[in-house]
Length: 318
Image 1: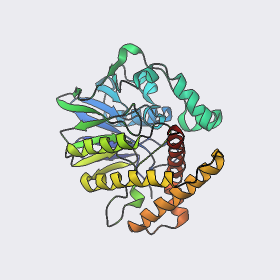
Image 2: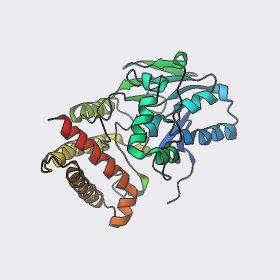
Image 3: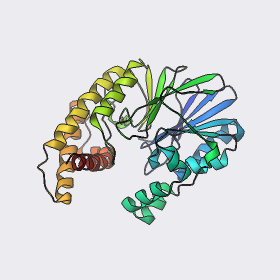
Image 4: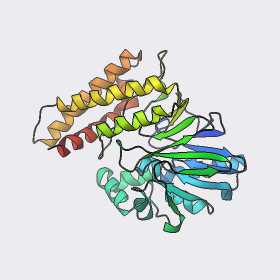
């Protein structure tokens, strides 16, 4: 399945593939309102030229981009912020209160990712992480609003995946940019039953009650569509949200049923095996007829990250 780099999805919103690891993994969005624009999510530093190329192709002056808006500071969402801000002289960074300091001084973000991936792989996946000048940063508290031209955006604090996470409601499209709060839904897994959705529990701040409360908070806005970072627009959100709430509980049960051990490697392997079995079974129940190898290609990275996140959550409980 070939994923186009740019896709217009209505309501003056363009989905941009960030080209992270492989196509169809992560998206960011260009939102337009008259002569003004915003970029929501940025991908990695390597995504910056892709975003700028779209602006150039559309004849959008870089000064017309008013805001750069990462939903949270994980690097697949915010790694490109610094480079993009350098290229967009009139833009203000809108960021969660808990994320602002990491954008102003990203040393900890960079060190953490380098520790996980190693320097060579970090450079390949993320490129770099560049600081943002503090005077160009605006913190968005729960319920705060910003105007892109005459188009209102409303910001909602949505912890559970990360404590530095907000979601962005766009009344014009009746849509929400959900980051990772509303889980993952990769288009190749869509069947006659609709999108296949599942929670994401990447390290290190998975909080099941908070995540369920955040999902309910988004559903209470009665959105018509959601703009997922992983991946693209989905519609008819209510049943998807109900499914997510059930799956968060399933993840907790899955983690709690892994036999406790002081051997972190053994626990990690057991969690990965259980997570893989669970998600493969759910995909098959959803009508997905892919082989195990094909499912692994789509979900393998998330199975690994989800398992690590559950391991951290289990450890934090003791």
